[in-house]
Amino acid sequence: MHDRFSTLGQRLAHSHIALNILDRTLEENGAGNAPPTVQRILIMTSLTIRDLRAQIVEKLAQEGAKRSDYALILEGQPDGEPLSLDTPINTLRPGTTLIVERVDHQEAVEDTDIILLFDDDSMIMVDKLPCVIGRSKQDEGIEVNLQDFPESLTVSRRHAELAKKGGKVTIRALGDKPVYVNEQPGGMLPLILTDNDTVRLGKVSMRVRLRPKEAD
Image (cartoon, rainbow, N blue to C red):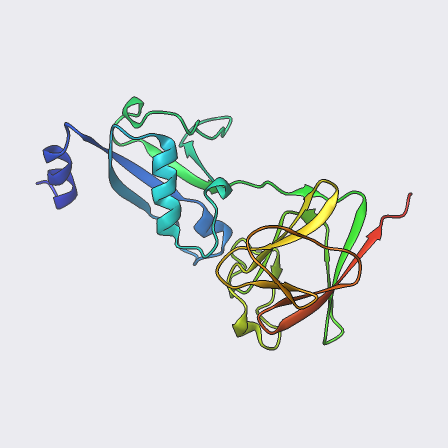
């Protein structure tokens, strides 16, 4: 006896293919102790892996999430290489399982010490960029988590990103809420930071110290 999904798959077999999606990002975010469940989807055979990834990232519903943060990998691939985004869906076999994994684009900062100083005399050192600053109870893809800071409810889940471009440390907003640098609002375009700049996200303020690393 067929379930509704199988029945629908048969009706749309001329234009769609049934695939299984395993979301590994749930494991990374510590979402429960149960094994991750496989979701079954029907997707048009005329699309590509790029289109499928876009749909999946939208369903992940992570504020400020970028499609480039995720990759799709064929289950059982020994090298774990992501599928090319231009791969046509019609080259996959029905019932294929695709694993969703987060892509680590971070690189160690080798020439600069980046220190975030907060009003309560606490500090956080950042040693890899890009780095997401935000608020989450589960640390979901957030390197600097402001969850336990006073006024943290004024900070978005994925509020801002520290990065390095052209040898300069930058910050940009990841969503609708602005980033303030020395009380000047900035949006999704990167703003260059200099030593002792004050950054404010919502009502949480921090002073950014940028110091050249000492030679060993």
